[in-house]
Image (cartoon, rainbow, N blue to C red; front, side, top):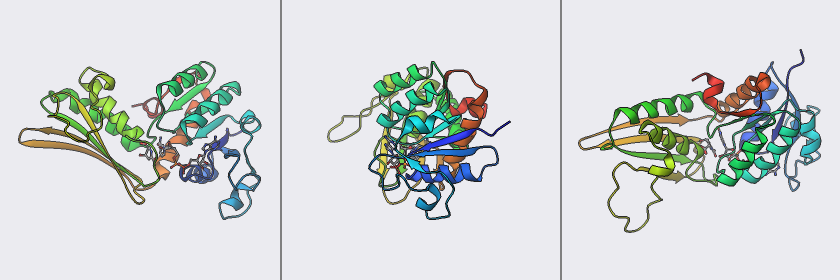
Length: 268
Ligand SMILES: NC(=O)C1=CN([C@@H]2O[C@H](COP(=O)(O)OP(=O)(O)OC[C@H]3O[C@@H](n4cnc5c(N)ncnc54)[C@H](O)[C@@H]3O)[C@@H](O)[C@H]2O)C=CC1
Ligand SMILES: O=C(O)C1=N[C@H](C(=O)O)C[C@H](O)C1
């Protein structure tokens, strides 16, 4: 059987380039397309050459309809508005859509849900094995410790990141809330600034650091009187996200329409 053909969106981005390398090195998938924005200087160029290497016979395009029509999977780490458009096109092509994009608002999620009626969509704010294990640990620790343990999620990322809190921080916050039998919407504290008043018992707070080339660091802090428990994940290489995304694209090949996450892919 032919290996699944993969299209990478946002191919010139930090994750896009990492995904291209990961798919090219894989013996289980073929790279069949690379999409960028119309304004990108990479449009019309051979992808391998644009990345500073040898030609690979894939031309970067700003025509997602043509590129996605020949794909069995679309791996997409771009922006919320772009991702919604790609979800519709991947659904029309009955291709697996792997979404790593973060910063998605309820209106984007509603459109993604609609697209998932026609094809499988795997979406996660973090595609690494370590973070997805940490999500499960966070749920368990939050359930074991009562709400006299304050939960704070602290994340740090590079200075080009545009959304906060990170998608991972929100996954961890949601897991802590679930452990306490709530949804994050019930327990989330607004960002702190000025005279905020004392901390409300049982709530979940978020802090975001942006600087330099930090790949991604997340702490879930449980703070009580006299002690603190901190669960930590540190990403030092974007390859962990790209490997997870390719794994999701391959896993989705025999799945029916629907919304899935990395816990499904990893069997957690
Ligand atoms: N779920 C996960 O494991 C991870 C998620 N991310 C998320 O992935 C997203 C991208 O992150 P980076 O690669 O660091 O950003 P980036 O800014 O380096 O790359 C994004 C790329 O998407 C392209 N793009 C935007 N709109 C487009 C459109 N309409 N058509 C085609 N291309 C388009 C941009 O030109 C750019 O090249 C962010 O939301 C980030 O939070 C990043 C790392 C891991
Ligand atoms: O933008 C990034 O870089 C990352 N984004 C994801 C997030 O928002 O959590 C995953 C990872 O932390 C890197």
